[in-house]
Amino acid sequence: MSERWLSRRALVAHLGLAIWIPACTWLAVWQFSRASSGNALSYVYAIEWPALAFFGLWGWWMLIHTDKPTDEQVAERAEQERLARAQARAQADALVGEVNDEMAAYNEQLRALNEKGRKTWKH
Image (cartoon, rainbow, N blue to C red; front, side, top):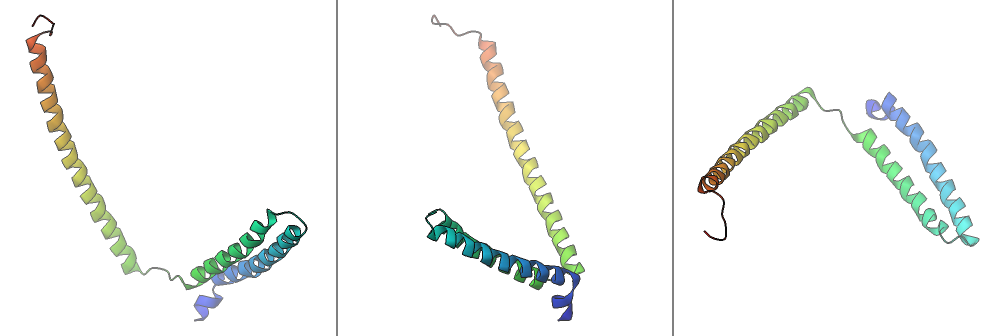
């Protein structure tokens, strides 16, 4: 428990949140006062700052509660990525084979047309 809440990463996140939330609150109040004095656009900013404070709170929570992956998880992910790359390579090779077959058929058609000679209105 203390590793989660008192690690260096957690303490930096706590400090960031301790600065972020009051700053967003102050900016929201400031924008609302500007909006009250006639600046209609400031109503949008007065809503935006609390939303940014919420996203900061969400980011802090995720940083604190996201666990480092284990060695087994890292190895499993690497194996899944290797298999996905191999499958994608096989699909690409199959596609290239199809394209080569289509290209050969097209070239054969062009060769046959070339052997017939030019087509004119008389023929």
